Image (tube, rainbow, N blue to C red; front, side):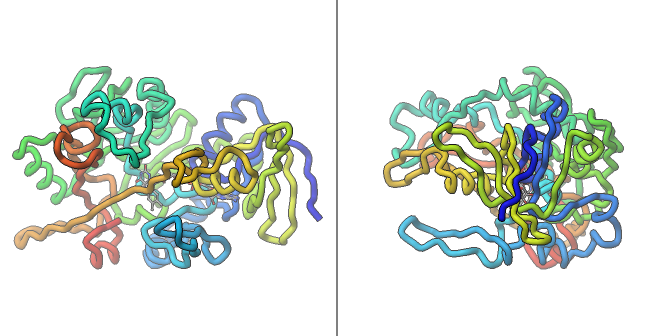
Length: 414
Ligand SMILES: Cc1cc2nc3c(=O)[nH]c(=O)nc-3n(C[C@H](O)[C@H](O)[C@H](O)COP(=O)(O)OP(=O)(O)OC[C@H]3O[C@@H](n4cnc5c(N)ncnc54)[C@H](O)[C@@H]3O)c2cc1C
C-alpha cells in the first residue's frame, strides 16, 4: 500500500548540483522543501576524509560514487532499429549517485559556454550562409543569451570559489587569460591553481605557434575561501585524487561543501536519502504534476509525497525518463524530427594523447585535473570553418593530475 504523506511546498527528485541549488533558492524564498535522493547521504567530514579517500581502487576503478547499476541501469543502442540493452558495467559514462550526485566526484573543470554557442544556428547561418548547416544537423539556438546568463555564471563562480585568470573583463581583453571568452562582469574569485611541468611546456609551445594559452579555470580553490553562503573551502593540495572521487581538502567545489551545510541547518529543508522516485503523480486533465511516488530503499515501503512544485533534478536521463513515463510533452522522434523530450542529448567527447620526453620527469600521478594549460583557439566559432567540412571544435588542454594507478596505466588520465 502506498502511504500518502503531508503535502509540502516543493520536492526535489535528486540531490546533485541542480537539486541542491534549487532547494537552497526555494527555502530562501520561504518554501518548505523535501529533497529526495536515491543514493546514500554523503557528509564530507565523515565520508571524504583521509585515508579512505585515497583508495583509488574503490573510487576511481570500482566507481564507489557512481550509480549502482546492479539496482538500476541505463539502456543503450547504437541505432534506432536495434534493441536497447542495459549497461552492465559503466565505462566512460559515469552518472553519480548519493547526496552531491555527480558534483561530488566531478573533475571541476569549469567552463562557460561561448557567446556564439547560445545562438549557434544563427551564428553559423550568418557566417557561412543559409545552406551551410546540413539538414540532419539538429543544432538550434538556446532560448537565453550569454548576456542574460552571465550574472548567474558569476554567482556560480563565487559559490564554487573558482580559480582562474579572466581574459575578457567587461569587454576589456586581459593578457594571460582566454581572449575568446564572453565578457565577464568580474574576475574569478581565486587566482589560478599551480601549473605543472607538462602544462607549462605545452603553454610555451602553443604560444610559439601563435595560439593563446591560459590557465584552465577550475572549481578547485587555490587558497582558503569563504563563499557567499558562508561555507569555507580549503586549498588544493595537488594530491591527484580528485576526478571520480571527492576532495579530502574540501578545495574542489561540490554541493556537499558549498550548499548542503546551509540546507542541513535550514528548518525549511528536509533530506530523505535512499528514496528512489519511481514516478510522478500527474493529473493529465489539469496538466499538473501534484507530487511523486518513491520507494524507501531501506524497507521497500512506497510513499506518495504531494507537493505544490516538483523539481526534476535527476540529471537528463532521470528527468527524461520521468517525463516519458508520465506522458508529459512530445517524445522526440528521430525519423520525423518532431518532439523535444529526449532530443539533442550529447555527452562530453574527449580524445587523449601522451608525449614522452626522455630528459624530463612530468609526475602525472599528482596534481589536479584543473591544473592544465589550455588553448581555446580551435573551439566553437573562435576559428573559421570555411571549407573544413565540420562545425564545432573544442579546447585543447595539457594537464596533470590523474590518480597514481590510472596515470601509470593510461595515456588518458580521465
Ligand atoms: C566523471 C565525471 C567527471 C565530470 N567532470 C566535469 C567537469 O570537470 N566539469 C564539468 O563542468 N562537468 C563535469 N562533469 C559533468 C557534471 O558533473 C554534471 O553535468 C553535473 O554534476 C550534473 O548535475 P545534476 O544535478 O544535473 O545531476 P547529478 O549530479 O547526476 O544529480 C542527479 C541526482 O539525482 C539522483 N537521482 C537520479 N534518479 C533518481 C530517482 N529516480 N530518485 C531519486 N534520486 C534520483 C542521483 O542519484 C543523483 O544524485 C563530469 C561528470 C562525470 C561523470
